[in-house]
Image 1 (cartoon, rainbow, N blue to C red):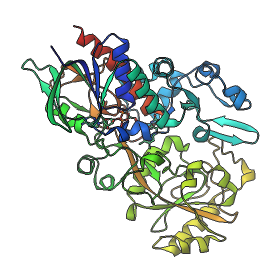
Image 2 (image 1 turned 120 degrees about the vertical axis):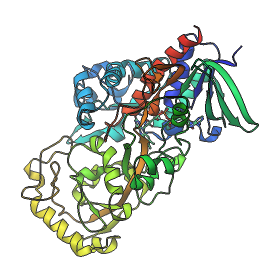
Image 3 (image 1 turned 180 degrees about the vertical axis):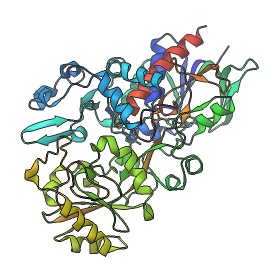
Image 4 (image 1 turned 90 degrees about the vertical axis):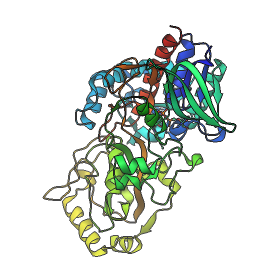
Length: 497
Ligand SMILES: Cc1cc2nc3c(=O)[nH]c(=O)nc-3n(C[C@H](O)[C@H](O)[C@H](O)COP(=O)(O)OP(=O)(O)OC[C@H]3O[C@@H](n4cnc5c(N)ncnc54)[C@H](O)[C@@H]3O)c2cc1C
């Protein structure tokens, strides 16, 4: 007799969605093996902002998730635009340059709303409006980023805590400090268990189905450098130190096919003052995403991206990498006083550098070529516009720099002319990696012989093919829960066959 019916490797959002789904679909003995000790449990999910992107036709459809929102936020539904399937899928296609896997992205978007409702109802995850992240106040109105209105209450910390509570209440066994090293593969090619290490040494655990949900390789410097390159090799890690690519390696040892963009990752502008790994208690407070309202200079005094190319939630996942490519992997974000009220609350975890003139500000910054920096800011101001020319922080306002400015700023190009001026440091922090495994519609892992590997399923960051070069904010958790739910269902069926 097997030790378990279903073994789930990892204990983040995808793993716990899979474990809950396996139970819901009739699996008897389900175990979650978490490499981290209990006090570090939950993977990147714990660090996350807990925001969910999903498709809906009418804003009123989200009411069951946030029943008190209309009482707490004035004119709540008036500030929300519909976000139908075509818009979510269109955003995914646009930011990935049309490369997102057609089958997987269709499953993700088509199931996105139902998945979030399932997380709320079956996963018992309380939710709230994502006010501090996705809403911008414009005049008297709160305007919401499209498709990104709801998050888990208490963000990733609450999401992770709720998943553990629900899984435990359904009888899922959680084993902490349990690092899975390899898969047990039978002569017929099927997966029948895992080899794992805990405080008592190495063990073999058997099951009819194994679900890998143990994250990407973002915390592994060797794999980052090898697959993505030296700049990303030196990135700071925004989430858990435990996602070391173990699951990807063990699956490929068992014949799994790598899939998706192994040279790609999600890396965002974060404060340069943070350490190599983000502190667990400060979760995602390292992010510095209000650059759309200012300009970014590198240490040679040059701008290097169009800060207003799109809303920050569609550029943040690639601009971290752009900063890592700059000298010293560092940049400065510069704002004037007319936009300070728009800076995300997360900026409050650093002290800004402040001065009354741009010249004085540059003197205080770690910039090698200050003369060039001043020329850059003057050229920007000469090409930028005034607030009375149609500036609107709540939408892509088309207020672009004019002339030959290179790179241009295509939205929110306000002149920096209202002192005092504020500067915040920024570097690139890696969030997760895009390379993963090829899976079927049932979340079963496919081998390099193009045949599914019996008994092996995968979900979460380990699924390859969804993201290329860039990523629309709030998609990771919904993708993890969608494919986790499918993997749990498939594993339950496999365990009873
Ligand atoms: C700072 C930050 C903010 C984010 N904000 C958002 C957001 O607001 N919305 C959104 O959609 N996404 C967000 N993301 C992305 C999101 O967190 C991830 O997409 C998602 O959490 C991944 O879930 P997962 O279950 O695949 O992996 P994880 O949650 O990382 O879980 C992986 C698990 O596997 C375990 N593990 C690793 N190796 C082994 C092994 N060998 N044996 C056993 N266990 C192992 C780890 O300890 C961990 O428990 C954010 C990420 C970060 C870092």
